Length: 405
Image 1: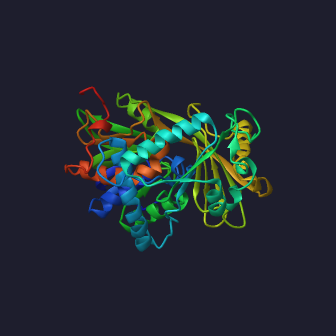
Image 2: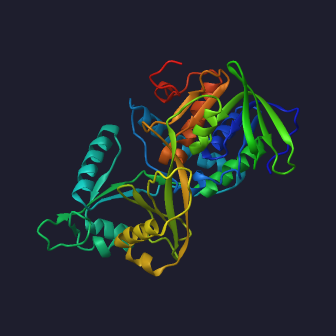
Image 3: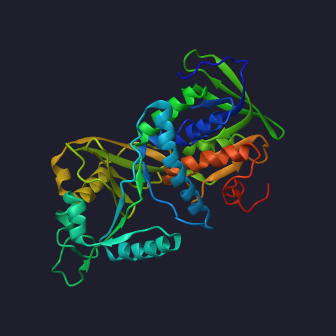
């Protein structure tokens, strides 16, 4: 269990959801003086935030108008600041580093997508380089064989330099792409919350929200530790429950476009990192950790609230990874797992007031970008809940988009 609290406690803010979004909001608001309670139905920091890869693509270098790019740009700035702040406060190294990102396009469709990416990077002022195979080989030695050895690939992505329809693979390098080791980041956030006096309630059962008119009056739950029914009262309530936000909001009569999307992952163990950068191809990636572990992911499966891995997807991920890094076939597969991302119909997260409840707020629906956008989300939600003007206009992220409640 987390920090103890009494039934008479009243908080400035109660947050439901102990993933990276809830933890980040709790830390930010507590740092700025609020008394905060953070509640999770399981162990804090152990759901989809833990299951991700911790990839942090770089943000725009100058002013941007696109709301998502504004969110990405702010997150990029705040993550770097928070890595130092969390270490100073907790002495936990989250392994944040600007390791760079290699983007590979081996099929005509991927090449076309990369050309569009380059146009977008140009518009955002994101610096990148077109690399030759020799440059890839010198910087990422273990990618210099297998499917990349010839630099020529057929449209399906299989090495066939002699085929009449073969096309040359393309490689792009973004130096300022970063990563953070998400399990350690979550541990550091939890430790920061404890240091800042946040009350942590874990393994909460039968959680429900009690509302009266346009106000959320309290949160009721059963303590896993004692079995007692508990009531938590707060001036404000923020829901940061990821893929589970939709069912919870339905109890208040609110519909959202949030739905679960399963992603599956693998973890290999090298003696030392096989390369230093994040490797991206389409929606799949390899992320090297400093201790030699290598994350391989992922997929997007709409299977409802069903976690677990499948042999079919594990085989697909292993085949893809070995096509780029053949040495992976000779190292142990340490473990595999899955997580449920909170998808949204339009690709935008929900950030802002939980209309019609004037003291209710929501921060959910970040899909594949929860850890990436968590730092900016925390700053923006803190500003919004205090009645300040957020650094980014939250109108595009409002709960009832295009529909005044």
